[in-house]
Amino acid sequence: MAVGVDLVANLARVHDRIAAAGADPSALTLVAVTKGFGIEVVRLAAAAQLFDLGENYVDEMHAKMAASRALRLPLKWHFLGHVQRNKVRKVANGVAVWQGVDRLAAGEEIAKRAPGATVLVQVNLTGADNRNGCTFEDAPQLVAGLRDGAGLDVRGVMGVGPGGDPEDARPLFRRLRALADELELEHTSMGMSDDLEVAVQEGSTMLRLGTALFGPRPQSRNR
Image 1 (cartoon, rainbow, N blue to C red):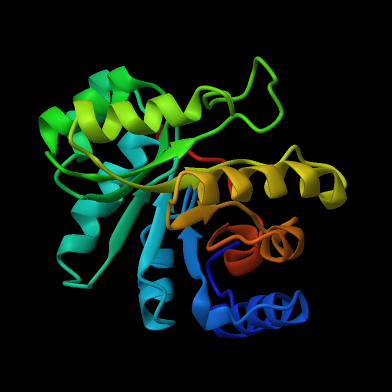
Image 2 (image 1 turned 45 degrees about the vertical axis):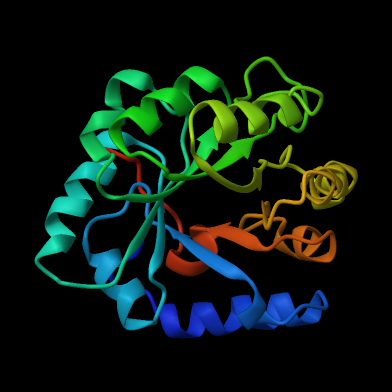
């Protein structure tokens, strides 16, 4: 649970894992995933100089944004979940990076509410029907549409590993990084608490970490 968690020690362990995987921790963006935790984790993260925060659900993000404004912290909120067009308006003025954009219609809604917003294109790494994301094949066209049609600032691609053995994610992460290079995109957001080493080795520039920083996640109540 986040209450009483030693975030400084956990962050040091994350840095050690990144270094052991062959990368410089300071060269990566660590997105602290606060999904399911209360506002106290925002304070903890900021105290540890973790200002990039990630949320998956609009209502939960909106509540934390509102509560954190009084703290006057230099936070950058990343929306990590599936972008629902009817909920974009609720958080559009506070999201720094939209990481879950997988279709042009979602991007157009973001552009309507936050012109020129920074987005990542989510790719469905496994091709499973129950996973969000566009296909690898459709990603170049989507990137072009978001940039040229919607006027958004497309900075990279994002993908979620398959779970299970981290080595199963290696060829998928490698393919995602190759796609980012092909499209000349700055960021490859891949790797979470269980598979960060493989992601780092395959060229991740942005890790999304919840459990590794805050411990076991309670059930989210606000979605």
